[in-house]
Amino acid sequence: SMKYVHVECLNQWRKVATNRDNFFQCQTCNAAQRAFVVRVLVEREGSDLIAYCLAVEKPFEKSGHLALSGLNVLVTTRAEEPWRSIASVSDWFLIRYKYKFKRTWFAGLLTNPVIVGLCTVLVLLLLIVLCGFFGLMLGYFFPSEEEDVGFLWFLIAGHRWAWLSSVVAKMSTSSRHLGQSQPGWITPLLMVILVIFGTANVITGKIRSEPLGDFSGFVTSILSQLVYFVTYWSVFAVKYATKRIPEEQVRWVWTRTSGGGNWWSRLPGFKYTFLSSICDVLGDNLMFLTQAYLSIIVFNLLQQGMVPFTLLWSMLLLGSRYILEEILGVGLVVSMAVASVFVSTRGGGTAGFWMALLCLSSTAFQALGFVIKEAMFRAYDRHAREHGSRATKLDIFVVTSSNHLWGILWVLPVCYLVESARVGGDVLGELRSGFETLLWSKHAMDAFVVYMVVNLCFNITIYLLVSYGSSLLTFVSLKLTVPLSAFLSLISWPLIGASTVNSFEWLALAVIMAGVVIFKHGNGVREGLLARSGFTEETVCLWPLFQRRKAAPPGYQSQSLSSPLVRSE
Image (cartoon, rainbow, N blue to C red; front, side, top):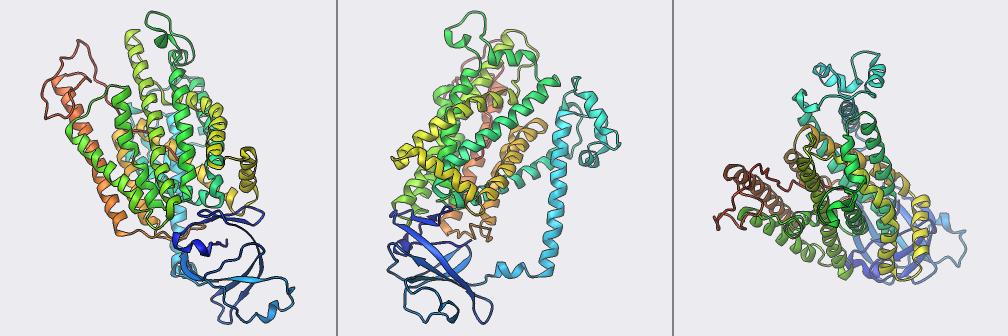
């Protein structure tokens, strides 16, 4: 795919979005271009490609040189001797641009048989991991009496050819809990799979945003909500049909609660997902919109704003209090995230700054949606203890199915409002152009499908690891994807090429990761204090500076804010 750069804005490094009509618009000054490729020729050496392009509107007036998508691009407007093979082209075609693509070391690796062989082996290993992943999904829904067979059982879903009849027979009966007897290798395997899918989710998300450009926000938000709705409701239906979800939980979510209390406490449980879905849709829309304008590492740095915003919302809405170590960790994350907005967008003009700030702001809505769902879990826990229910933990798929039902209803109004604020013109025409770009732009649909498959596997692996392991292991695995994706961004990927990471970004990455580790360690210290001394959630802030505690009521069970489920996007 050929990239077009507005030479007048070359120093600002702005990208140009395209659609199927070959319409190019500079993201910095909005200068419109309509270009036609006349001829692609190969030089005598056979190593370089020369592409001549025509412009019938405002021509470029400067010359420059830059690195784009891992290729050296030479842009010039000097009058040059025309190639003999294009002498028959009509005289009114005015050649204004010359793009010279040179082969890179990465392209040379693809011709090395040893490298190709290693890549083939890696692909086969990835297929084995995928088989294990789907086997684990099957084992999650239909656990077998013969789980001690080991990894091979999860690869072939049973060591007998009659495994299908066994699965069908179990669909009508309830099964035992997975945690009672599970092989020790499941949790480490899931952690590895989560790191792989989490890193791939970041890379494919950047690739997906490239051909969509400005349309990436609402196109991805609308279609992803539809995919989430179908997927999570399908999982919910299977679990409900196999009696793995208690009837009481479904009634609590979808029907009014009888008894005393105020009007809010008597409303159905979906009141929480009704509100959280608005935050999720808005946060996802802004995140998808900004992803095309930011490098992979800067995008990852800004997305760590989930940690301080989660702390802030939990203090305001849940009454949670945090010790000094947690505040210190969050302070490191906030300082580096804010510094990344200013330093990492230097030289990118005001557009880059506002996109970085918008990306950081999107985490506030995502964190608010998470805290509202956390309040839903706590509300059901109180309800279950008051009514003597055996299942005090609300099933995650009861929450996600309800959340994405409202998400389907909210996504169109939210996208309309965001696009109206962004373009301020024909919003419906903008939406139509976005989906036309997805259908007709080269590689747009392919990149989107690959991203959605990876994103679904990523989210389902999170739920599997929480079920087989713990939220702490999930949190650690998710944070490992941040430095790994930063290293992999140095490789030249399709459509996006290779990223450059400066020294400040490496420093910010190290400080943010240290802040996250300190914050999570502080979570463990606070929970240990709760367990040992028995004080309630109304803890005085900034322990150990303040030592006074409030005595716990009889039968109190402490609640702590778990690590947030990282989304997609």
